[in-house]
Image (cartoon, rainbow over all chains, first blue to last red; front, top):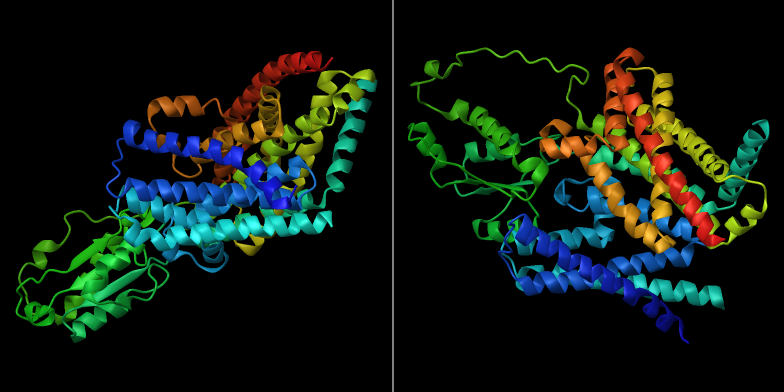
Length: 157
Length: 377
């Protein structure tokens, strides 16, 4: 079995779990909190799918590096919460970030997905304005996955 | 009794040795008490700091240039100049949070007292700045145009009826980074305590060590207490080092109160939050499940315990629910001790509540733990 197939097999169930979460959260926002999706629902969905691929890919990448499940779960918590909550633009606009915060915002996919979700929910945007963000998330997903394949392949050799 | 304490001590040492042999885990602990406290406090402050602003200058006049140059750090980044047609594009992409549109003939209208209008466009999705910054922008523009204005009418009538004299206590310059730093410290303490202890319990279980331990003359509570003291000690060491080196040292946050009292409170908090970690671990069957459960628990804790937004501004129901979460009391305890130099006589209710919550988790966990061990047998 090839390394890529093995990793994809590990990733896909969690992609499915995350997609269910994504759908649930969007439904909660729309029906419970009455936040209307003013822009393109299809763009939001496309962004969501690609973002889930990227974020589960990051999980894979972490697990390739660490030796224990404890370390993996802890690394995922410590490393991803900061860029996702503090630097993604959720509280503070990314245009106001400086230094390491700015850098973290640029290299983690949560920043780009934040602009997809804010763009489709409240700014009434569609693929025309958001395709760059979605493309960047896709690029990051590919980088995470290839890096995992490469590092795992090196370990086995 | 002495034998029990000896067991607990030995098991705790074993716990620390296994942590010491995991360089990735050690690196992550170091990371979470340095970088992940320093960087948010420095750059992700929920206030009008480094707000990005652009000016559309349709007047090309002296006063328009003066307005553009009046937006200064630390409140604003240097104002960019953009074309009218680019406003929508740049607002959509979030490049600028604020755009000030100065209309044609602005200076001449101002000089003949024709009350020209300046449009301020705000990206209201930038939650932390959208509310306050337009007020600042208005003040800046009004004081900048004052010298160019010819009108004499009305100024005397605009004098305020009541004179306000504001004094900010405990944080004279109202620096948000102080709160961000302490809040991040608390967040990382919680993450570390929950994940380290929870994962430690699951690790024993998944590696089948629990079966080994069961053959030995050990009680479940010995195992549990050992995990709490060992992981707790590591977190205390890391947190206190970080308080001195990062919060006080690198960030220059003045710690007003007693560090000793803070450490005492930290011990009580760790007791309750590690108990929470173990409780969560006994509710699940595997590490992935633990991750899926512990993440939302931690995120909700961190967002709702009063560090990000004051507890008083939350719905009453939520305020009551959050009373059962130890971090709520620890946030209020830490802010009181570190910023307001509170004494033990003022903060003991917080300590008592944290301790009570911890005991409740423990009792619940011990019953689960017995069942879990019984299931293994």
